[in-house]
Length: 312
Image (cartoon, rainbow, N blue to C red; front, side, top):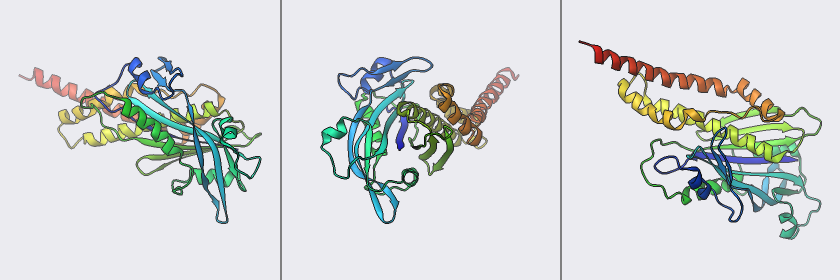
């Protein structure tokens, strides 16, 4: 069994953060279903997940065979702190009990489950999902996630010049379910190009909702790191006059620095996964270095301003 997903993270277009009521309207993708709203530890407004039908190859796990997937994937969207948008799609992949395609009522009765038809080898299929290069006709959870994020952006009627410009990122994640194995284990995290990250790991059980939430949290913090790195790069510290460099850093203070809060203690699986990411990738260490660099520039600018003010 596999649990697979993709998360797209980006900045809400418009003039600035929106209120919780507006965010609830923007993510309301399933009419009649309540939007989930949380204000602690940070503002988090999330649409209920809805099933999206799929019928396509799952990827080429071997040169001589193709595995077809039929069923539904969960799709949902969220807004964090009023200005960070996430579109997410995820599904559980199981072996079909038959080789013939069933009526859609069969698949709709199992939302969020994709049945694999063909000779399925889970380890090979996991590698195919985790590959940065996917066949054009293969299961595209990224497209489903992006569709959710795009709908939120289209719903936003906010006008004005954004205080921060930031590119989006994609996190593709694959969990191979192996009962009896340490959970999680064999954790791998890779950065591919400017926007794609791939997270793979093995778990003993299939708590799909919890794994999707962990992946969304990792995606958020990877995006924060990516955007802060870009802001610091554009500030050209040491090349531009300090006042101009600080002016380019200010949007990071307004939009980014307060959002760093990894959910590392929700349960044992989450804690173990974040512990490995912190040890191998160094998310929080890199974040602290970058934040200190921003604050050092502010401190140096304040000292220079005071020196200028008191200079006879």
